Amino acid sequence: PTLKATFASRSETATHPLNAYLFKLMDLKASNLCLSADVATARELLYFADKIGPVIVVLKTHYDMVSGWDFHPQTGTGAKLASLARKHGFLIFEDRKFGDIGNTVELQYTSGAARIIEWAHITNVNMVPGKASVASLSHAASRWLQRRDYEVKTSISIGTPAISNADDDSERSDAERTDGSEEAPLPDNNGRKGSIVSTTTVTQQYEAVDSPRLIKTIAEGDDSMFPGIEEAPIERGLLILAQMSSEGNFMNKEYTQACVEAAREHKDFVMGFISQETLNTQPDDAFIHMTPGCQLPPQGEDENAAVKGDGKGQQYNTPQKIIGVAGADIAIVGRGIIKASDPEEEADRYRSAAWKAYTERVR
Ligand code: S5P
Image (cartoon, rainbow, N blue to C red; front, top):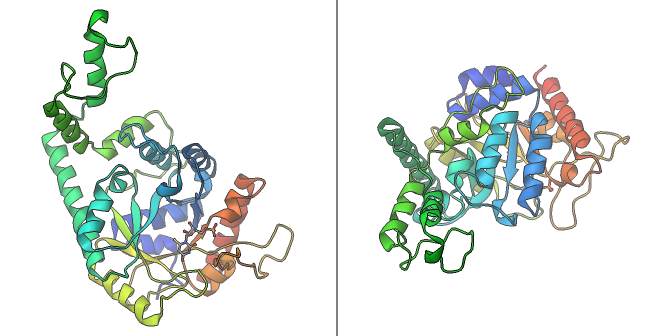
């Protein structure tokens, strides 16, 4: 039912606030391209986010393959990505593929060093353990939102606990310093303020970090590149991994159908699917579909010629096949762009091919 509908009209009828935002963004930027930034270092990740940001609508990350990821909630890699997302107008999608019992995925989503929920607008789930994993992630997201609302209402101050510890240190006389180093000591039982009590306070204060306000602060002074692009809504979204691009995967029709049912049961949290085709079949299905396994033939060759796999199970289709024929909405491209000799130019070639497939589809 959505094959002929324009992204602009789907923005109006979307049930999920992030879909409403994303469809509008796609229309505004004339882009239905997602960059899969599969790189080994945080430096490269931020580089690509900044360089390719203007032509994409979603940046997909695998934070667990990135070395040098800075976990600091206010100045770390997640916060920097969030600031670039606001500057260029794209959403961050952590391709975490959660796949465990409900209680575990909730904790993996909201806590740990990475705190995915703080910086990723979108994440995804591998629903093999059952529908409960979707319900649990949804529950975790609404609890997180409630806590944020509460924090905003009661305006809990963020504070900079680690830095205030450094200040304490600078107030000490040189004689009190044990090693003369400039480094702020980690809180411990020996320091003046470094008691167990202050460690707990540090944790609680980090707990209260309010990412959107933080994003605003970091991005202040950045002129939005695309007039009309507003800040993304604070709501979080989930994509269900309903079909895969890899050879011999075990996601059969029945499994895919169960994913669709789970999505319909959690419309306020599930934005759509990672799939190989559109899965909108009912009149009121309003899901978005993002499709990986996408490459173009080399420049100069027939744009619709078949592309070989990567020899490690990955299979590729062209944007025309994915968007034009299979009816997906966003093409996800990794190595096709990242490994190109000129990634910026190549990204625009992909944007243009995927956009052409879309405009021809809705014509
Ligand atoms: O079915 C899938 C689902 C995903 S999320 N097939 C995939 O390839 N992916 C991801 O898309 C994969 O983890 C990788 O990050 C990206 C494809 O990368 P490329 O270099 O092959 O374009």
